[in-house]
Image 1 (cartoon, rainbow, N blue to C red):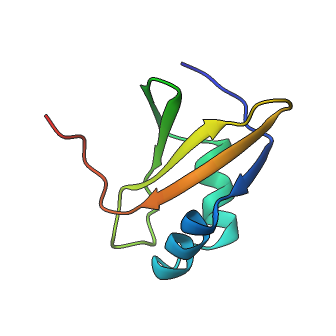
Image 2: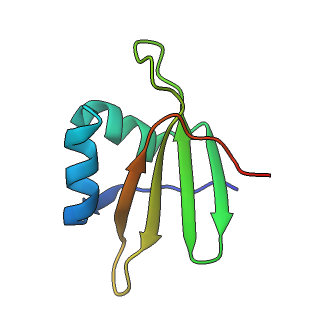
Length: 85
């Protein structure tokens, strides 16, 4: 699955998680625009990426396409992400 996310916004919850997890704007933008993996879960997508300079990998963002225009809504950000089997 390939997607192109050019515009995105954070929910207040996601903004708190970005701050708590010490994720830079550059890292978040790289994760969202150039993910290593995209996992579809209904209307939600989980985008993942590993950053060599972080010890809490794999970093993931959950996004949902916002209705009306080409803006994607980031609803949370996770670290040490693993898929549950």
